[in-house]
Length: 177
Image 1 (tube, rainbow, N blue to C red):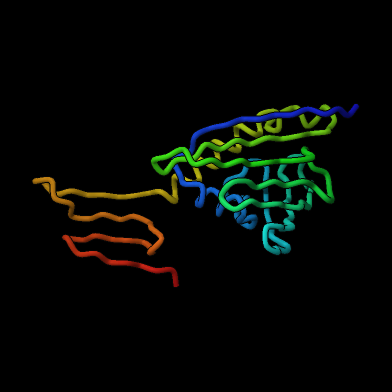
Image 2: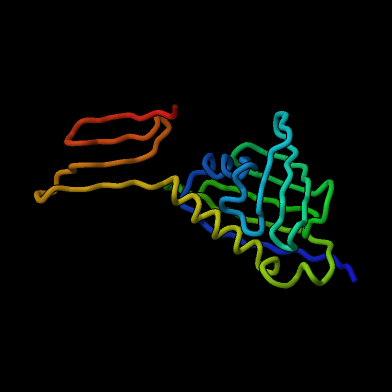
């Protein structure tokens, strides 16, 4: 028996909207952080539209192709166009919250049978937001080692310039090859 329901969860994540948007539109990397995604692949992108494919881990062997609509740094919405999906719409809304943080809401609209309501799918919005926050924390990593009198001996941070390393008061910039 099929029916329609909505699920939503919101959290504050320690990352600017630009970084969240970049992660949410990198469909090839979804398997690294998004629950229930075994593999992701961007098939096509044109402006604010994209087509992506996902292999789901539950039910095993499930495959879905989605149409993705973007509003830069504010919203990413996906809807299935082929395959068996547990949702008819998944929408990420991003709002700047100040201090390098963002308020993120994940909304799911589902028309599904009872099997999609069990297990991990029952809490997918909450699980996905927590996974996104954990994934983002790897991008925001900063390492700082101080000496005995408080001076910084070593500091590593990722910025728009690249990976910045301060070693004994000298700045080194590493860029992606």
